[in-house]
Length: 542
Image: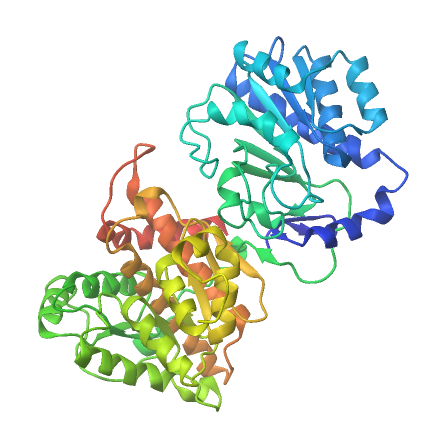
């Protein structure tokens, strides 16, 4: 899990209640940890001001202050900034600020606004530099209360592209530093029940919170810094985690390895209407370390793939993992019947999933076929990786949970993708790779995994086909190890494989789009061709 100690977990999130319970015995009756938190917020604020203007002296700072510890942390940071020469105003959204923190702010020269909304207006009129968002912390639920919402409304009007405050900050003239998390976000689920002021940076404490890992809320957090206050990390498993750099599945073949020990991918991809999907998926698999790619496709697809990738094999034979569905139209009845037969052989019909067939990546046109098989009693295992985007996830959930209320549609999946991924995984038994920014990986009994999906340039036609191929290659490599050790695939194994593939794809997109430090347009094949460079970069990182 990356940076992890008894008092710091920089790559994992626990429920707010567990965090509060772990902290309570140590924080009762002392303001030591509050001072430490305020010190961290102050340091981050000074860094933001250095990047935004010449320095702290004379900078105009607005502190948005709520109740509880979060508001107190913000008041103490406001006091420290005032002592550094900032002109600080505090707009309170509570009648009960912590008295000691309020006194320190007043004594340091912080202007405590009699009319908080007027203070916000004055900050904007004066060309303010930095907002400290300390309205709510992890104890809050739901959207901001009217009093707090009224304070952020004028600030949202200055946030370019904020369209309901669901997108990152654009070209506004001031910076925003969130204390613990952007106020009003769903602490434990990452939803956005009401408008939220997007942050440029968030300073959080001890561990991540789900709102900083799960979309859509995490997209409003900016750069996230996890600070060790000396408070304990909660006991028990986290609810969300980010993949550790040292835990990626990037093995190097030894001198005795060959194509079968590196993993063979069986690929059912491409169609007469979408022949390029077969080439893109095959290229993703080949570039991501597959020992061999066996293609099963119409002749037009075979000819296209072989003209560009002569190493691809079109003869049937042994494979350790299959990729089903890229560029396949489920309305093509003969092709759908072919994929259904292969898919059925990979699923558990009551016995061991491992005995039932090969691990599989189930993508695009194969997803509706899977939903039909599961509805008739088939069951996936963790070695079956489903790769829907939001619309495909909604269709699968609607087919498998038709009685659910409210009904699953694309908008609901996009509003609460963490819940959607967990629900789809629970209904199928599969590992779900819900594509988005970030991509979420859910497997039964395992914490959600949140993986950055790369720059916006990767959102191009065929990018998902490349990802399916990468997933297939890494899954086939893992299957070789499972076979050699007579091991049943586990959820942690599957999540590690999927996270590795998503990281490879994201970094390949980043490298492909980078031109002298500037992002530029790319096509899907650029991503596939950059996978070896991404592999090398990830190895260097780890």
